[in-house]
Length: 302
Image 1: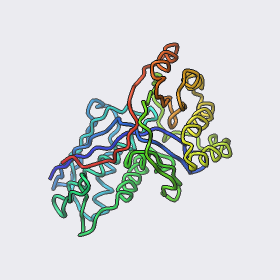
Image 2: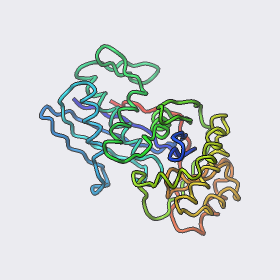
Image 3: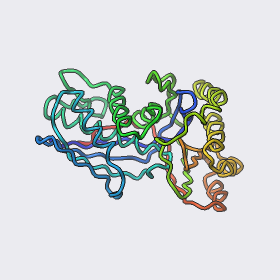
Image 4: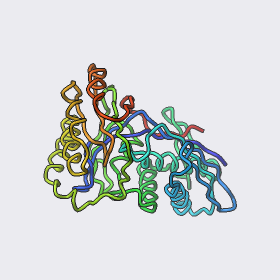
């Protein structure tokens, strides 16, 4: 049985390394996962366009989903994405969400049902609807197995899955505040290089816990833009990234700007200052990706 699903990207509001509490907002970049169940238990995984990237996360998603529902299927898994890998745009969380959702969709076709509700397909397994948060948590377990996360990234995964913005307690895996994002342009500056969050020195990051907790409370109150900027500038210094990329975006009129995740990407939110921010970034070495905020949830395609 085969199924496909898509989940959207996200960018950081609050990085959770320092306090275990985080936040993220949806970006309309996306990852599509297609899975085909196998009776022989074998798992084959492929990231289209990135043949050298590690596929352990995708394999771990298969293992976790089958364990959860007590099945012994293997799967052929393919993902394709327009999200840059290891650039702070939640490529791992998005891949885990899309793959886990597609796997559960395939199981539902074989051992349950897919019910259309409010324009999307709801998964029914064991005669019960599958709760979206439990789908996210299954993907997070796989991310821990694959060692691509330190905090569990519930903030990233929830914003990727639900769209809009989420402010979270990652330790409790709870969303404490959420809402829709304004229709804004998301400008992403990509310097050369990748940073994998599984290798972060958490002890060093904890030195800014007080400041990040202040920013988290700011986000919880709905003041997303200053939280993004405070968090981004603080983590640029901790991770040795250039804070001037964000500062120049703010000078050019961005509503918010800062490092996303561990970087190296810098994300700016802009309304009528898009061209001015792009011009300000021409003095830095790197490329710019343009996207939009996303309020749409992850979904099964077929």
